[in-house]
Figure (cartoon, rainbow, N blue to C red):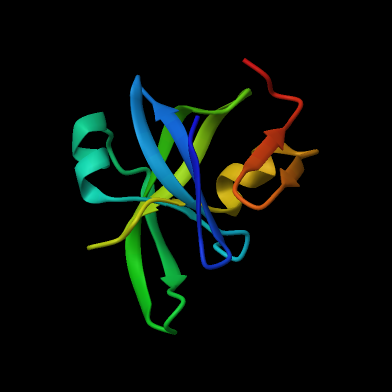
Length: 120
């Protein structure tokens, strides 16, 4: 899977229902985020509404969804909670990263490798 690094940020490719989705790895994001195009493809129903604060300090209520399965490199993650934000990139946040615990992340100049106990 391809990893892209831009100015200290890392993007990884995840597989969601057979579809490759590029996601920004953000350990500061409480929720994982998927954009509306991906969610429309998944045909999921919202679980509930939750209050969030964006990185820019804006508060809002958004729909919370549960993704049955997300595969990231050799890690398979079940029941990942995520939100949908308008005009937003896909973000791999703490709702997914916590489920990979204990998680080891290996970095070099251009690659991020995950090693987790929930292997495929």
